[in-house]
Image (cartoon, rainbow, N blue to C red; front, side, top):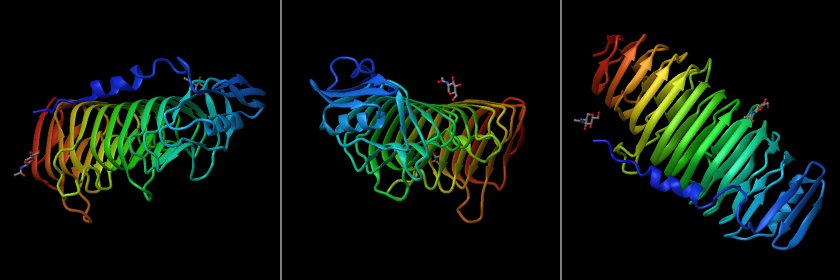
Length: 354
Ligand SMILES: *[C@@H]1O[C@H](CO)[C@@H](O)[C@H](O)[C@H]1NC(C)=O
Ligand SMILES: *[C@@H]1O[C@H](CO)[C@@H](O)[C@H](O)[C@H]1NC(C)=O
């Protein structure tokens, strides 16, 4: 009954194609250290000086689609924006420190095809660590953000839509907002999102269809808020034909502490979650509110807030929900009664369902 996921095959690509960061013969490099950077394209040195951001942008200006820039050096780009064009392969092998630039990402790729960022390590407090819209065939590899504020990865809401996006391993620590927030993606494959000490969501999917996600793993995510380690909102999973036929597949959701574990809201659904492992969530372990076509096939909820089906008046009530779980140390509540709801709950949970 579970559709086999194609993740391992697809994602093996992300790392095996590239080898280590900076390996082989990159078409361009940025090397050096604080105060002394060099950018080289082919055998030409195109920049030499103290400005890390200028070194990176000069190197990028010197390569074209299909070519790779490996930024070996670490440094700060301040409020600069690194723009990745179609077909460019950008590797951040050093640590790139970034600052707040309202409405922008430290790294952006806008209206592009086939941009690739196999490796990236960011620190600092950006507005968005990475910002995207209008991208087709974007591939993100091992992305590590150790932030002191800001939002990790954002696909914009009010801009061109996106298709065929790959993410391998996205680790975000310390974001004030979400680790990963999508809008308007048709065709999304994620291996892992690992969120630690993040203010809002670990993975937030919105108006995103045909998604395959391996693991969403949150610890201390959304503490004191209604956000969740894994949240689906704003008609996520609604297909163009108006149906909620299952098209969002998630293998594992793990959540410890924080706010909610899993939250489906505002006419989202079309989702099957294979296995969950939630413990000690400070808000509802699971809240499903005005969602259609949600299946959780198995796993455990250990303590924390309740597992709850609820509804707001502004949208149709929950329907076509199937939950099989072991729930202990908290309760399971369905209020109001949904339509075509099926519960298979083991464990010591108090049940207050229809
Ligand atoms: C993350 O950043 C904090 C301070 O900004 C630092 O103490 C910590 O060692 C960093 N962790 C990693 C894994 O880089
Ligand atoms: C009831 O919900 C399940 C999913 O939990 C779905 O597979 C099934 O088609 C629904 N039944 C009807 C009659 O819509």
